[in-house]
Image (cartoon, rainbow, N blue to C red; front, side):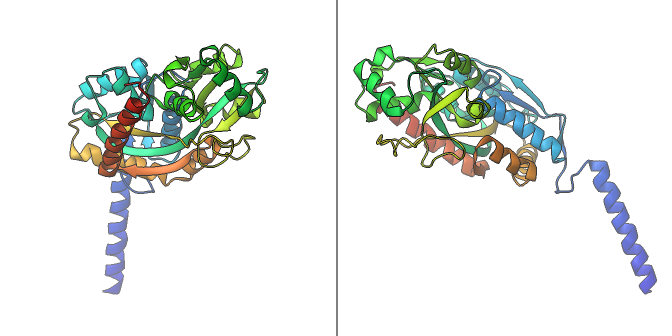
Amino acid sequence: MRKSTMLAGLAAAAVAALTLTACGSTAAGGEKLSGVRIMVPNSPGGGYDITARTSAKAMEDAGIARSVEVFNLPGAGGTVGLGRLVGEDGNGKLVMQMGLGVVGSVYTNNSPSTLTDTTPIAKLIEEPDILVVSKNSKYTSIDQLVADWKANPGAVPVGGGSSPGGPDHLAPMLVAKAVGIEPKSVNYIPFDGGGELLASVLGDKIAFGVSGVGEYLDQIQAGELRVLAVTGPERIADVDAPTLKEAGIDVEFTNWRGVVAPPGISDADRTALIDAYTRMHDSPQWRDALAANGWDDAFVTGTEFGTFIQRQTDQVGSVLKDLGLA
């Protein structure tokens, strides 16, 4: 009796193992995703692009998904991609990498599609912006830069990897206001992602650039770029630069990135996507990626992320109005 019970148990375990293998499930639990596409709504080399490709690799390396495709659809600060996503109603195999930049671009581009039209999946990371110059720049401190900027705002062009309303635009506008510069007088030059901005910073075609730290870590470590200040609440490890507050500028600003899906997807597809990103978040591959890119973990999913998006939408609209930019 005991022997037959043991054999029955072994047989059941074998059947269960075969079933898991046939379904393509991972050791971490849950079914392995296949055929998912991640849309990046700006150019290669920017923060969204790096985040999307890093998450795709982490999912594949952790055995959570197979053959994840990342593609770029730039334009209008991410709202071209947003319009495409909203038009893909019910497509549970498509997600879009996004963040604070898209929130602002909806306002400044009068986008007919908004983030409230999408299905929130997961907020992934936060990271501070940096105020950065080339190694050949005459500016070696934030104080020197601010002195020139206040003397003649129009003669000190600043570039950012987002369109007006995005994080790389909001950060210098808040700094300008804090040091007594009228935001409307700032000579802001938008680039479609940090990748496009980099060449202008390295070539001293602008006085300084504003971007996420993760996009420029290699150039900073190689000595090609000099960081004058960090917008977040704390200094960044291995980056020799003060926070804005340490420099006497009363600004604290942090960017964030997440993932949304089209409207109208099934409950099963929504659950599968949230589950995949949750397992990715818990993987050693993702923990290594956070450390390598200087990203802060800011993981929330589903309804909680949707509430956060709505709160950010309201806040950005208010800030743009206060700055006289909306």
